[in-house]
Amino acid sequence: MIATFVVSLLAVAGFGVGLWRSNVVPVARSAVRTAMVGITAMMDSELGDDAKEVAVRRAGFSLIGAAFGLLWRFALALVLAAVPILGADLIGLVPAEAVLSLMLRLDYIFIVSVAAIAGAELLRRLRGSARHDPAALPEINRYSTTDRFFHMLAFSSPAVLRGASRLEDRLMPGAVQEPSGPPIFVTSLARGGTTALLNALHEVPGIATHTYRDMPFLTAPALWNRLAGGRSRDVGRHERAHGDGLQIDLDSPEAFEEVLWKTLWPGKYGRAGIALWQAEDRDPAAEAFIARQMRKVIHARSPGHPARYCSKNNANLARIPYLREAFPGCHIVVPLRRPETHAASLLRQHLNFLKLQQDDEFIRRYMRDIGHFEFGQILKPQLFPGFDPAVHDATTPDYWINYWLHAFRHVQRFRDRCIFVLQDDMRAAPQDTLEALCEELGVAPGKIDFGAHFRPSPDRAPRDLYDPELFAEADALYRNLAPQDALPDSLTPVGGKVITARA
Image (tube, rainbow, N blue to C red; front, side, top):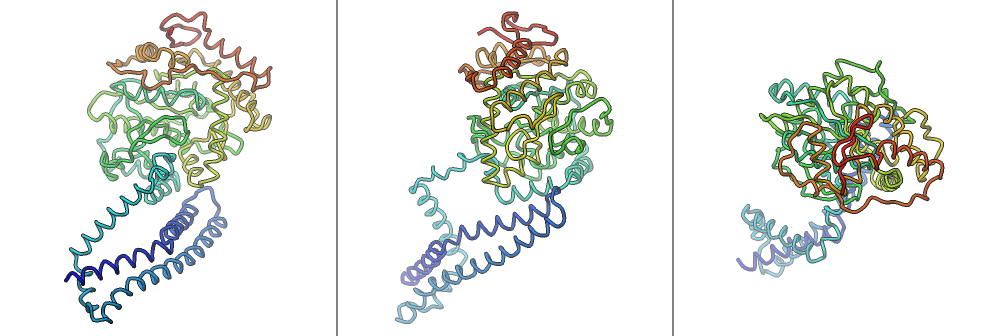
């Protein structure tokens, strides 16, 4: 019996060595990626029929080649597994039938499989798994093949997201909850501090936001979370793709609201950029759809408890007057960052995402699908009055300081409808600043330590990166929106509201 067991282990080892030395894993992964490329093409609403046909045909030929590659590798592994079995049989040590009979037993298969998995994991750790730690990768790269398939299915057509919403309404009619107050919209240009502010507000009792758990069927958060396993899903905390040190997991809040606007007003998203929303763009049916989605998010985050919807959506900077009309009583919170540091950060992230989207097609697809057009190959600036994207190259600092200038000139027109929160104050005195903001919003912060969400270091960047005239205009506008000498310790009306606190 011992000899039979030893021979069977040699056969298993031969099979494993055959697969390992023939590099079957990279070939299998390549085949899966190729299949996903074909599926992506079929589900990509931006591709024409001819382009889809070409992409699917290429993927098909590649899969045929991969199939032959896998076939000969498995054949080689089977040959290596057969060598010790046939050898032992030829020399009269152990009959081949006895070895095969042992290897087909369920208890043998279970024990050997568990031992092999444990051994592989130990070997991975001994070889230095930190070099391949998925926590060091962007959150998008942590998507499994199944995750990517469901993402592409959800975003293959606006009809899918609308259909998911209707299906949830039919199967779970009670998955909506009336808000305890008007919605809160956190908006600014990207890199203005909106994410840190959203993370802080997310901790406030009675605030409900979208989280990563809602992806990809954002329009059916309760139904999707139930189908996908709810809180049993876990990907661990890891740094987000921006490389800015912010840690996220499935329960982290994120900016997914733009998916709704993109689905309901597709004509606003042109090749050159995103047009602003005007009074004539009012659409009661679309606004009712968004309002219902807000109530769904409230139910998903805070079932049975009073709560208010809160979103972070940088594109809402193009909708300030629209939001006030469509959602009466809403609060529009605008984090305000110094133009020299804000523009420098925008440029860094644009260059970062140019590389990320070049290295991984799915990252480009993911960012486009969720409406994050702020950076990279899919950059679509908001077309603020007077802003011409063609005046400066987007890989230069002047593009971004010019963008900042026109964006906040636009915001200045509606300053009486906004609550401004200074980036400097969120860093220097986060507790006082956020408590003052909560008071203005009419929510009770409890005993939250807001300092955990903001960097304490001063927010500084060189000013000589930019055209002197452009920077002078931007700096003057910043000082007009946030006049430092005039601000008291808590809340000051300067046309609108400015939340601040002295360090």
